[in-house]
Length: 463
Image (cartoon, rainbow, N blue to C red; front, top):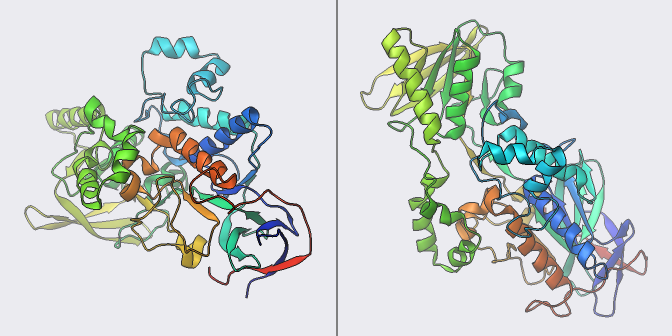
């Protein structure tokens, strides 16, 4: 049985306040780039509409803002153009644009002279941290949300959520915006350790890895991250062999051509969402080459040139195991033995290695641990155009998804490409539903209230 909380109810039975404090318009779960873009949109809304401010709180389990710090490899560049930042496609005049960041850092002219649309990941990480430090937002770092529980009013309608954290805090909100990001995919044959790890925290794992004695690494995967890790290991461990294992015949180049890139345009979300499921699935399969298991042509050329030079010299350190797969990885005190099958010839071989890097991609983080019975079974095939998750009729509080909506909203669902516009659309929905300006919302959501003990509500037992 969950705890009970004292709340206020108005004449229509709506919940308005809690014994812990005010009710927020929304609580953001996670504070990565997507919810950072939303926080900026909220700040700009509140500045422009001080008579109708949005009240929000964000919870982030990391102790400070960070964006893939384990993959900030020296010289690695972004795969999207810098105007697809936190704000520009939503509000080109925003002071949070990448151009504003460059001006503030004193590098605007230098960047323009550089003549590139693609900053390094180090610089873009600095931009994101700059924006996170500037934004006027209530962010609770080092606080992990463990449950979102519906709270029912005296009419039996769940019009609030109790958002509970691991450290005992509870925040009440009329909506939650879930931006928990992605989870690393780990192959069944792999057991994570100091010698076998996902590339997501690659640089940190290298620091913790035992001193290399075999001078041999295996990298599993054929995407951009895999190729970058291969290049990094080959460069920074000049005595070591680097073996890349993938089930393709070779790296596939990323399709960055103008017409293919239109799949990431904000207006395409409208077209994609309105299309039949069969057509959405067809387009996703057809255009996977714009984002998944592909490598920038420049990096492909650099690695091929390296491999060719070694073939000429006879001193081989870079090996590509094409059309192959790892069968097992057995760790022992001296290293880790990796069994590889060549699917073309059918034979197997074993490599004695210092470490295995799993560049095996990501999957959307599951919703069930947070939302309990309200979470749909993956894949999520029904999400409203404004990114709201369909909920039972007796739940009028809203759940918005910042990610995990690829099947309904297209390839930009978990990418930076559409973060700015998506944030604006979610905020428009939240304000419209709060104020009764959107269809079907009139009278559903009242004004925010204060503390009172006149009515008692029970939280749902569903987790």
